[in-house]
Image (cartoon, rainbow, N blue to C red; front, side):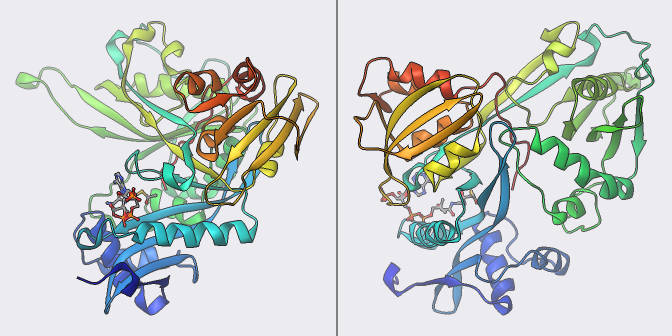
Length: 418
Ligand SMILES: CC(=O)SCCNC(=O)CCNC(=O)[C@H](O)C(C)(C)COP(=O)(O)OP(=O)(O)OC[C@H]1O[C@@H](n2cnc3c(N)ncnc32)[C@H](O)[C@@H]1OP(=O)(O)O
């Protein structure tokens, strides 16, 4: 067995990409050898310096990649993020510190570059807290029993001049990116999508053997403005004796820039003949969906879990990038064992503006950088973290002040997996 120190952790060359991808597939327990189609499709994204590998002898035994992303802060500002993905360590080399070596290197480079945060979607909860990441958004999935919704069974589209139309993948590639840009800039926690995302999700780049073309439906307001898009597939199922269709519509993604678009697209899904069940896919925990239905109990929560994880690399820029609904002042003592952004800061904020500056004043709330990430987008409550012993009030009532400042009227949401 090689010691971890004998294993070289470094950026891969493009020539090493096939071996690296084989290691990714091995780590994610997929068929190891990539097809030519997968190799070509994934190679498009390759960025020298941002793809790390660990090599034992000639073999790639661990993988890690990062790419530039924007995550929307509370209030709509795009924040420069180091998005982390493709993290694997082959089972033969686990628990020897390889992830720690790759992560330490990448976060140091992100800090050096000036990224404000790092982001990822965690495969398992216990992996990333030790590196300063905190779960910053929650994802909820519903299953809707369409026959119970109480919707008018004769519904055939919006009645105010707006339209829902089936559109082709090619059209989606044209208008989707601009619609998504409007959507994500208005949605704290949402992240930017690369052109590659649209290619893969509309079938222009096909490498997954099980990928099938979904249906796309777009919503246009009466004045013609495109305000929503849903991609869904339908699982065909007929009841005993073929007397009753029982199809399930599975939503791959639904984005909308207005509540009217959201309503019309859910009504569309809940009104498709043969479809008796709609699986919503990942939504915000305070999504409008259940309450858009006359009988909200027709929508049942089928899963709820942490989704986007954030690692704050620059406390001042992260806290100054967002807006605040309340007014107040709070001294935070942030502990960052990795040394990127720890310190004592005075946050002064109101709907009119914010300042966050290093201070020598007494701390009022002490917390790890991990917990600050959980609070940053407004999804978590400082009072709850205090009750859990995860933040400490140095002044009585400081957690309540933090909540009045940091919490938001709508919860953040990241619809994407990356
Ligand atoms: C953003 C993404 O890509 S998410 C996908 C993550 N990848 C996977 O889940 C694929 C399967 N798992 C793996 O490949 C590996 O187990 C990894 C990448 C999760 C961990 O890699 P390792 O090299 O084993 O981690 P490393 O040895 O650096 O561990 C550092 C510490 O984290 C702990 N740790 C690592 N993984 C886990 C885990 N899954 N659960 C609990 N603790 C963990 C280790 O025990 C160690 O703790 P210690 O410092 O107290 O001893």
